[in-house]
Image 1 (spheres, helix red, strand yellow):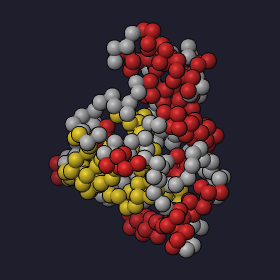
Image 2: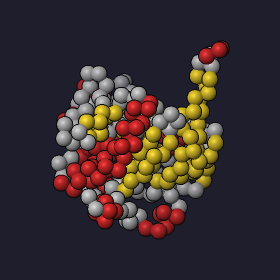
Image 3: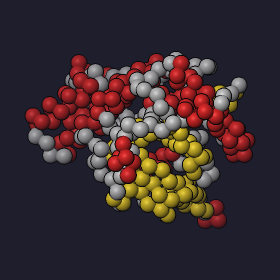
Image 4: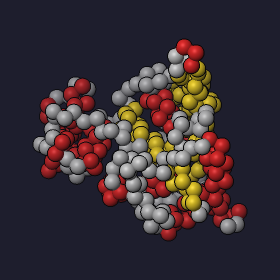
Length: 310
């Protein structure tokens, strides 16, 4: 591949404009975070992330990709305000993040729905906390249930839903309070391959409709490529930024799209050698590197469903 073609493949997405870049939605500047582990003689300070800096533009879909232990969830918690950095600063719209707030909502791998509430009542829960009246709560809940195609199941309870439907309910609940940023921590990792594929399509559609700023944590290069504008590749021990790559492909995207396959090859070429070094150095078996392919190794008994070639 020529230098010119590689440069074209990694060209920055320009749709956000100069103003959006000047004042990013989220900014991490020199962020480090340490945790105490063990007790007594075994007590020590573990450095989860070190000197991490990157920006998330307004309306951007940014993916954080890396092996276990690279601090992806820690970074998400710092943006959400659940944790405070030991060094550096986290900014939201130019202001330091000092705590959690409804403008930054987290969607976890476990959906966290209330089992005693119907789908509609689950979606309305955050709206009740915000003080909206009954009529406005219902209207907004139905609007977002329609967006995730669950209006027919509004009176169902979580135990009556499939895993994908429960995660779509959690997404509708998060969107209903209309946060400025969605923080998604491997939300599809526990789902079967077909359901995950459907939710990739759903999430792309929702993002195109709402222009919501999203920070998405994943082990999967393929998932990051399909969904995001930019990919921040993290290395571990301690967690740090290794690469930041722009994905200049139009949405919606499909795994079998020729442009996405080419982009995937370009990205793998850019950092495959470094990830090989990282895997050998750290003994992290969450990454599988075979015949030029880098993908997440599924947990025991869980298939990723990305296929051997994609």
